[in-house]
Image 1 (spheres, one colour):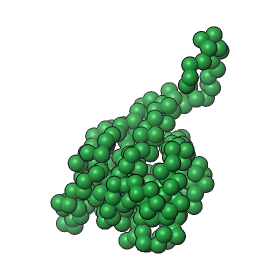
Image 2: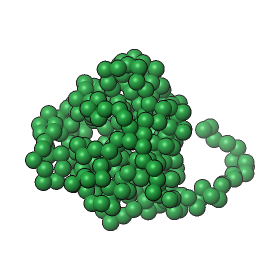
Image 3: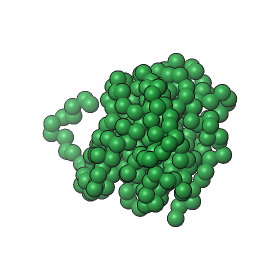
Image 4: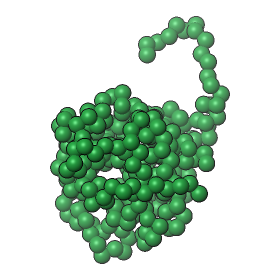
Amino acid sequence: MKRILIAILSLSLIMCSLVGCSSKDKNNDDDNKRIEVDSSDVKRSNKNNNRIVVIDAGHQEAPINELEPIGPNSDKKKPKLASGATGVSTNIPEYQLTLDVSLKLRDELIKRGYDVKMIRENNNFPKSNRERAIIANSYGKNKDSIFLRIHANSISDSNVTGALTMGPSDDNPYMSKENIEKSKLLSVDVIEEMTKSTDSMDKGIILTNEMSGINWCEIPVTIVEMGFLSNPEEDRLMNSKDYQKLISSGIANGVDKYFNN
C-alpha cells in the first residue's frame, strides 16, 4: 500500500476555492522524411483505448446557489456550484484557468490513447457538483475509468504555495470501500507526478467526506488543486501556457502510473 500523505493545511481554507470564493480559460515535414514511432508508445496507446478518463474543469462563470445533498441519502446540504476564486495578479478567474488546463490535459491523454470525456468545454455549463459526478458515473459505468476534477486554491495568506489532491476519507459513508481505496491511490499518483513535472511544492493529499463532487462518485475520483491563485507568482505560473503544459503532462503521468500499478 502506498504511503498517503495527509496535508496539514486546514480543510476549511482549502474549501474556499471549491465552495466559497469569488471568481472568473507543425509545420508539415517533408513528405519523404522517415517517420519513427516508439513501439512502447504504440503499446501504451492500444492498452489505454478501453480506459475512460472523465475531466471536470471546476466551476463555471455563474454560481448556482441553490442547495443539494453532499452525498446520497445525506441530510447535509451545500450550494450546488461556486464560481471559484480569481487570480490576485492576473485577475483571471478560476473557472477559466481550470478550463484551459483541462483542455490541454484532454489533448495529452488522447495522445496517450485514453478515451477522454469532458464534463464541460465552455464557461456556461449550469450543472451542479452532484450532477457532474453523476455524468462521470454514466461515462464510466462497468468500465475501467477515473474522474479528474481540476481546481485551484485561494486563501487569505498570499505566501502559501503548492499543489495537493483531495480524496475520500476511510470512513466515507457515501462510497464503496473499493472506490475509497482506488480514489486515494489515484490522488497519491496524480499529486506525486504532477509536482515532479512542475517542480512545485507537494502538499500531499487531504482526505475528506465534505465534497459533493467526491461523495456522489461511483468511480475513482480525485480533486486536483494545482496551486494557489492567492499567491502572485503561482497565479502567474498557472496562467502561463508552458506551465499549464507541465501540469497537464504531470497529471497524465499520474494517470499512467495509476492504471499501470
